[in-house]
Image (tube, rainbow, N blue to C red):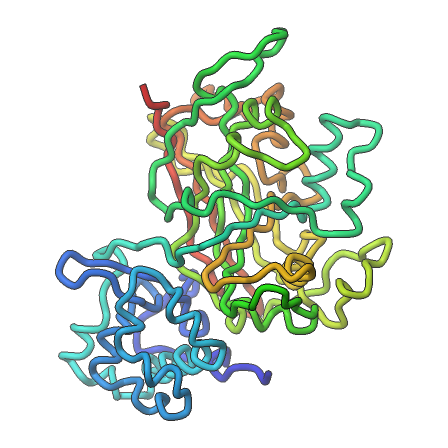
Length: 435
């Protein structure tokens, strides 16, 4: 498919956007906002604003593309008055691209259609600070991969120093199925989970609040096009099924997780909460930031081999706001998605290779993303060596694992030739365990 005209780096909007903003006119990510007066609406982010697509559709701003995309025309305007993007995703890639390109036209600096319509601007354009953002999709299924070689090696070395990597790790994208209904949107507090774990030096377990609560720096892609059961997805077509990307914090209770370790994958140590950013950045918007991935040795089997660049260079940061602290959030890690060993296309192609059906709105997380240097590790498990080497923070604070009141913030952006495409942020604050 040819490059989208909405990616043109020379485009300018009539809305003031700073060079450091995550959402320039070349981005236009999709999300779902809500106001007390109007309820939920599908929206697009532009600068510090959210463009209400339901209001735009009611005012006829999408009529010009409705005939070219019949599925969209039949769904307007109600498809944009939903609590998730799922119904819009089911319309398919032609509708996704047509809407994004039409929004780009409406926001272009030299297009007066919306710009000079004062009533329409007041109706359609809301400041993000004045709306509540909802979880962008309602996933039926959630898969968490284990796709960072550095992370897998670091963690494996803690438990299996002689053979840190599992024998199958370089041959297939390892993953487990998670708990979709525990995924929450950025800003939602996360309560410290309770569970069974074995304290150091003891032979028998105890039940209580986790003592080793951790974050995991991840991204996740959103499935747009579903498949029927029994249908595989060739690697060359995998990205046709991916709508876009968001930030993902897969909260983890390390002591519960390590005690319950089982061949079937994580259970209570993982399924209590995962946090997502509210805006989904489309693959179209990320197109300029493609890069070659790491060399894969040995070469994967033919069904996982790719002939083009299917990795993206997205800068990722982890920040901590310590409990009770008045200092600005502290950056404790910085890495990039380019370090991932397995690409999104390989992850999806592998998952569908046995005929497992895909559903629009499903989430596929990357697994913890760690880089090759000490400052690029994506979890406290690695940053503190299982809590034995705490991070030194201002005011003589030490951080081994997360404490009640700590806030974790993940941020992400791609930047090249003066163009910045941001994923926004996902944040969550730790609440005490339930009594």
